Image (cartoon, rainbow, N blue to C red; front, side, top):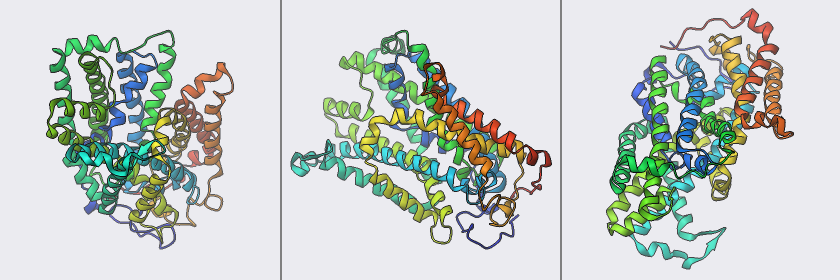
Length: 483
């Protein structure tokens, strides 16, 4: 069915509920989306920081699996209204924060996405740089070796080339993202398994790999205390997507497709590629006498030693595709819809995507990359507070029922106080404040180490208490699903 939506400043074609004929994403499409987002260089290198912090490789894998299992729960819940009503995240957030207040969580999510877009584009540009250097050795000499902020002209040119490829898919829209993710998923899985096979073959089997992996960790008494922060960081890795997952599940055929697809794609791929990173790095210790965590560096070395340009070409293309699939889905869709929501009459999805892409250029991602692991932990707490509000609203107050027409009506049931729900902002602030208390005293450090958990629980409970009268009244009428 379709809804008789009110004409006004809260609606454009990109923000309107997805019509039934466009709800074509199956379980495989959703799973492929997660494979494409999970297979990237940061995922491959996730365990590096954990092991260097003192965790064993087994504890590192457990942190990856546990973090993803935890974040899968809000992913499925926040995906539900997308599939049920066909609405994107900025519209979904209007129910809890208000028709104007929804800009707060949407912009918070979009800012983080722009940062990640820049980081991933820079990483993909490094792969392009290595590929062009393999095909055309003179490439590395462009600019005469001059450096700016620690990087050369060819590196910046490769960054711009990869940025332009990303922009192409922004213009292709969500249908282009769908086929990109679906076609690339088998390629990415196959490439990962091929790298794992190389590692096992190079050292004489998996047994040797695992024995060497035991020696990667520095160990120490701080290993146990590092586990919670890294689980939090893993939750924070997808905390952004757990908010705006409805941007994708609005195209899903059913709740079963989105639930099973997310479990199939996320809960298997992330641990697998974290393990591949550990196994391959263990092999580099045996083969080269040093741990090489960066796959771009490893592929470049293999290419030089084997004297085969094709090894480097194929590998760098795979790395570039892996980075592209992650970047487009995880980091450009959210700010595109967010910016469209800020000014629906003037900004479309494509225009919003272009603005986000330009922002990714201007943040100097090669500098941000140096601190991204600490950034993961910090912003996860903030986004946990946003998630707590949205989850409490949908589960406790609305009980899974939204007035779709009201979400697009500036004078409707989600107007609150001039379009802003002050209770949502208060609950958000409470969650953030509790997480930040962990910075004030060693005895409260666990609050910041587990920032996502503390912020989510506090904002969830606070919002539920503040909105209790509305929850008891259950004032939102039941609206049929879009079918």
